[in-house]
Length: 114
Length: 113
Image (cartoon, rainbow over all chains, first blue to last red):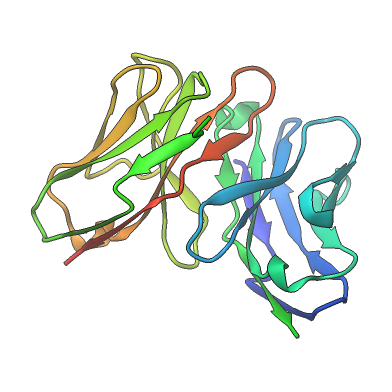
């Protein structure tokens, strides 16, 4: 069955330092993978998606993620954190076996220290 | 385009009361979804509608009903609210074709006392 594991429930970084949010997935098929962001008391916004094209995917606000099939990972990175990046981030997988439904990770809360 | 809209934004119910959450999208999407979000958990699918006239259960359908009124609108009904249904509810719609991304509404924060 498909599943998503976000390895950290909270990540705290200083402003201007790199961000790494880790995600591992389980899928028997060629998956599509997404990162969504949710700012406090706001809705969900798509950051980026992987759908079997280039393995390094660039998203909005300077974020990018790399699809590594051998490691079943899709980690989210940003070279330099900004205070406005403080939010909750969700890794999501979808494939044919899930009838293209989105399977969500539990989320990682990103905290930015001034 | 307004995208996906939801009403109301906030609601407080007493146990046993009923209510309907409304969702509409103006992107001509075929598929629509209802999720709930609870603290420390990812979104869980309640019901979805792959196309107008069809609805299917998701992961947590108990205590809910849905209606796909037309292509634009997809409502979620709680017939007899319970405290366990206190949550934030999100509606989403999906573009057809090979891309599976979903577009989300702003959410409804529901408290059942």
